[in-house]
Length: 485
Image: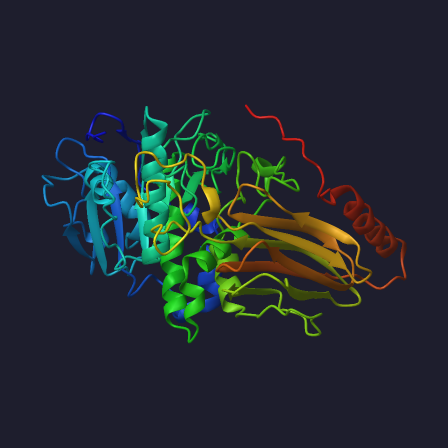
């Protein structure tokens, strides 16, 4: 079967507009800038790439624009003619000097999206050709969508994307469609990419249909009026975070699993647009807003909080309010455990924990077998992910061993716990799984002092906290999906 450039996948250009400065406030960047001052990461030293649906023969931004001072562009496809206004709007949000949060990205490689698909090695599905090497890029933006008419082709290309992420440690970030509807085929059906929606919820959302059907997308949202702009907002944040990670002595925080976990754990659920944000025991994220809205302030502090190693015995030292762990256990015969503490006289307003791992698409000679023919990427590949997907779970208990919350999706490659108003005390998080596999665990939390008793006002405040805790506590065994529009 031949995957012709126009036979199966139609690449659709999403409209875009120049980013507006307020988005930097909305995603926590302004607060981070005020806090860090001259130490603020700006994407310096982080090479990125962007794939664009061509407009005629144009798929690159205006490379001569003064908004990209100090940025070198490479036409990777090699056929660009002129300027794509869509690409220019995406680039402005991704790495523009005054319109992004990563203005010092030094090198940008541009692809025609069709060529990028071809470089996945998918010109002919009957070959086992591997995707081209993209290990020089830390972040790759895709503000385009595609639909296919062949489930086997969608699954095949999704596997290639997952293999590329896992092999080259590149964050692949793509946009969902605009308007209420289903998710696009390409990128959305892969496991290891990030799919971005809009904070107003007016984007394609739903579940995957092949290669592990039933997984909820998108993963995260950002405050733009179109997904072509919300997507590079997340990419810009990722470039900023990568610069910070590159400047630490710990190489683990630059891995794709930790980066994705940090972005998702940092996402916020507050605000009128997220009044109905919801997750369940088996559905780790909301069915419209994913993990919530991008917040680079939170995600930065997740990485800055440092790495805390899990313990196979009962931990005796609590982790910090922000932090992460990168683990690659040889087996999960013993689960990994982490202690969380809410000091006496305080309440933990929020606790967001995200666990992320990659699906491992390997050649059948050296890794899990996906396909009975032995080809790495064969057209006869099973449409389900098979034995290459680890199954992890999160369980959060109080000091008496009572399960406060849990996340155990049988189909996803991530788990998520989100709690509010935790009372003072010690808690334990357990990460369990069916095998040893690399994962990234990230968390953020905040605590507030509970005023001392002594007045009616104080008493009412305490009662309000307790009452709110009771009414807002998540039921880990609730399996009802919220209504969709």
